[in-house]
Amino acid sequence: MLSVALPKGRIAEDTLEIFETIFGSSFKFDDRKLILQTENFKFLLVRNQDVATYVYHQAADIGVVGLDTLEEQGLDVIRLLDLQKGKCRVAIGMRAGEKPDFTKSEIKVATKMVNITKRYFAERAVAADIIKLYGSIELAPLVGLADMIVDVVETGSTMKQNGLEVVETIMESTTHLIANKNSFFEKKSEILDIYEKINALLYGN
Image 1 (tube, one colour):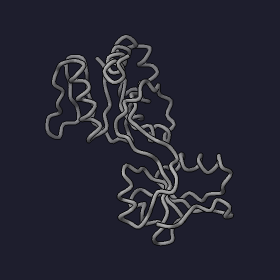
Image 2: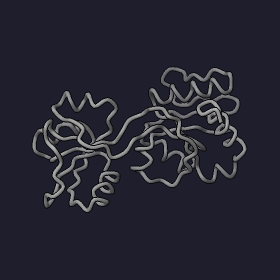
Image 3: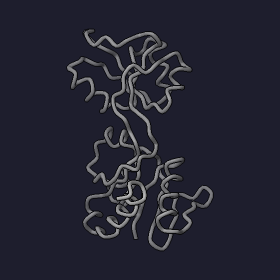
Image 4: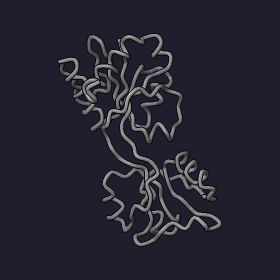
């Protein structure tokens, strides 16, 4: 049996639809249940930020998670396949009309994606004071806490509604199928079977 960690919400629904298509069975969670057990699978509903952790510690054999979360957490898991769902980007936002000035002696950046942000500015040899926030990040430039923010953006409408605009994209992100390294060797045929079926469905390979 394969255990599969899914992030709650739209991505879980999209992934279960893929499983329904390739296996011809119905996969539905009962109301408020966090585990869905079938003959061959055990699906776990977890927070998006926790999917890779479950897979890394082998509490799940495989999982589905955004590339942005993988890059931020840096956990040692196998990236099997880009599922082309949950498209978004990690971007820099500033007050409308402002442009980044990377020549300043120090730039204040508010974000919940500390590692991606640190790497981005380090690669450009820009001194950045990274301020970690957990929510309402758009407020930071409006109240003088930061010069700019780094956040996940889908349409950019949340930034616009708060008087900000995207000035630069750091990375594009989609959901990826990942696997635990030990599970990949212990259950290789089952995991590769899933991989090949999804790959054929999405890419015709």
